[in-house]
Image 1 (cartoon, rainbow, N blue to C red):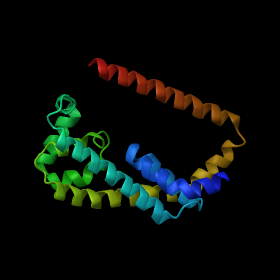
Image 2 (image 1 turned 30 degrees about the vertical axis):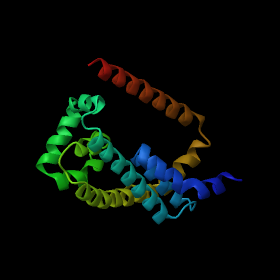
Image 3 (image 1 turned 90 degrees about the vertical axis):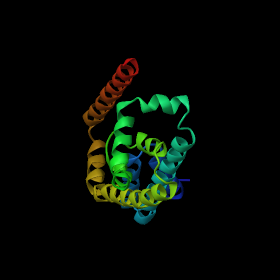
Length: 187
C-alpha cells in the first residue's frame, strides 16, 4: 500500500485523533492533506471539529465527575485554572465558545468548566458550535496555505542547509519546552 493510499484511508482518523490530542496543528495538517487531494476538505473539517468536540466533552465530564479528586483540587490552585473559572463564571456562553481559540486555556478550560455550575446541555450545545467553527477555520487555513507548503517542500528537497536549520530549530524548541516544564514543576 502506498503512502498516498494509507493517508487517504486513515487521514481523517488521524485528523480526528490529532484534534483530540494535540489541536490546531493536526487540523491544519488535515487542510494540507485536503489541498493535496488525499482527503476531502469537508472531511478534514468534520474530523477536526468532531475530535475537538469529543475530547472537550470528555474533559468536561472528567471535571464534573472528579471535581473533588486531589488532582483536580490541585489543578484549581494553578493560575490558568483560576483564570478559566473566573472567566466562565462571568460570561459562561462566551467563554465556552471562545476558550479553544485562546492560547494557554484550551486544555484546562473544559475541566475547569466541568467544576462549575454550567449545565451539561448548555456546555454541549455551545461546545458543538464552537468546535465546528474551529474545525472549519483551521482546516481552511491548512488548505489555503497548501500551495506555499508545497513550494517550501520542493525547496527543501534540494537544500540540505534548510534541513539542518529546521532540525536546529526543532531541537532548540524541545530544549526550551523542557526547560519551561522543569521550571514550572519547581514553582
